Length: 412
Image 1 (tube, helix red, strand yellow):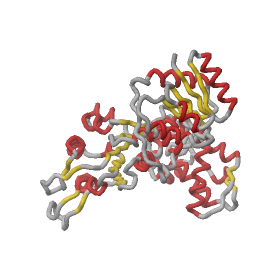
Image 2 (cartoon, helix red, strand yellow; image 1 turned 45 degrees about the vertical axis):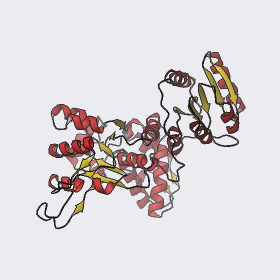
Image 3 (cartoon, helix red, strand yellow; image 1 turned 60 degrees about the horizontal axis):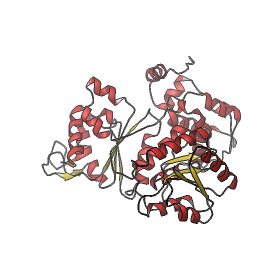
């Protein structure tokens, strides 16, 4: 019979969970504060842990358990804190799962079963030092975004390559930065390379650097992005756009952990962690022969997929709140309210440009606002000329995206 410890300062929650889990056949005990949890954790198989506790936080409990020798109970956080920073930190400190109150009872039953089933195979995540940095502004309340937070927490404790997939405007670079800032190397460089912004002829030099005289115009030695990243993070955005010959060289660098500047035979050590991102379907490109299969699997040790905004429209109100705080701060303008009609218009729109487009629409509205209220007249949507201007894409490209994603059309 599995033994479960419930730690919560709310007596009614303790009783409810105790009754439910006892009815499921588990042996259940309870604690109401952090010292009690730490004192009674040993000998239990599973710990359901609130974060807001008397005598210390749930993070203190997680940290204390991480310092103890095995075996320690598997920890499932059950808390009212629904934010990215808490989720990432809990996962980093070894939590198996992060559930937000009020918890669906069927979901809890499933999580408890899976946690206990995987207990023998589970490896503890490494505890990181307490963080003074924010890990990013990846805003949302949907299950999909919470899963992204958990993945950030898990991969930030390793230096394995990560591939981030998602449509343009979904926040791939934000995720890469969040992984970096949440890692032990957060004080080292974060170097981003937009592979679409560099011509094929200069991409190799930009990545690996060159020595004086390597080619016409190489008037001095120049370090590349791999070298500049040092022991930090190198972020390769839109990796699918790298030419096939550079793909082969990149593969060799990832395999051998060394590279050479263009025109130089002296090997240099690769110390940076590599994170790549793309909006393209790399598996499909592999099938067509336009992307190397071996490089695909080398980059895809861990894969994080970001959902498009149209698939998480329930996140739009909280995104609007978070983005408006940033926009008004940057523009030094007082905008306090969004009318229900304006919010309904934003929520009902399909957002082919995702969060980036939403931020641009809100920025325009704030700039044009005459009062501290944003209403629907400041947010005209689905005019294709305006949408193309906001997204910085042509009308044919916008039409192609509308067809590709099956979006509702407005021929205005």
